[in-house]
Image (cartoon, rainbow, N blue to C red; front, side):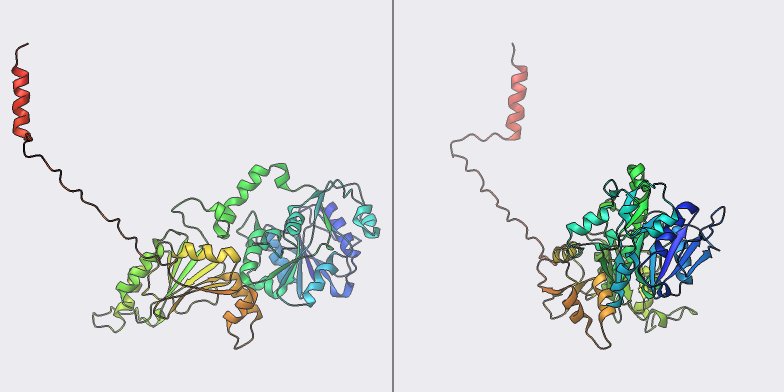
Length: 466
């Protein structure tokens, strides 16, 4: 276990954090602690009371919490990365509680608990000798984080639709390989960096496991408790661009976001430009606008060193490349990636069956009801179209052995559902029948007034003397 602690100043609180880690029940020889000094002035120093294997790691390039955590993870030797803040005091069993789950399997993210307390005048020696956190802090007056309430409400996250929400730091543990596989924390995310990182972990397919035995206190209230309105506004742009599942943050019509909601993948090999043009137009003009289109074809075979002629055997492919090359919503690739992460959904279907305006919206609505992993629509000609959940694809990739059918794995973890196409490709509405009323029948003796008679009658009325 490598405990990574990003630190920028705050020496007094860090001393308490390290004293608590020195008293852990987890074996000393299986734990190292890396204190990452993110430009502190004066520099961080290691106190006398600290874990046996503790070292300082200075940040050489960049700044910020995300960059500091990444720096520590790169320097770590342990199989498991434990992220811990420099103002946290963990109970004696904290590291053991989170580490034990990783003996079960290699795709878990374990989450510790925290409560917020005003820092009392305690010493590192007192923290080291205390058997329980209640001996040091008034836990009855502590402010609970929303994490524990969410975990309780969702039966330990078993019923949570988006369990990454509770993995917001500052204490969680995951395999080092998983940390690096998803790219670590994003230094460009100045606010909500833990939430954004956890979302990418969810798309990778991990299972989030909270452990109530991993208790800790956070020394001082977080910023959102001091000015919640500004804290929420400050984090919104980062989450809106990077977490498509936050539909509440993407209500502005016509916007383009950094990470799209759906990737539409179409194989255009041996397809005419006119068919592809129609399919692309349908995909981008649906009710759901938060879409990117990926056209899969042998684009790398095209020779750009010379002008192509009208008899070129790759004429249609070249035409498509020139037509779509400058549209940022359209990607040209030779082979689709195993998953569209971090995009949460992927549609795959025949290029000659254009999407209806309501297709994507209704497919997503359908799978969100029961969180199915894949929705397969059986088309009338025997072919299929499918909507895939990225987190289910990621989980299947982590679980599957060589030669396994991924749909079989997804069916076991999330479910694979088949449905007919009627709801997703509704038939065009038939126009209402128009009833032409029968002409009015004028009695034979009725006097029919023509426009000429009407004009004459009005003139006579105007000339009649008073």
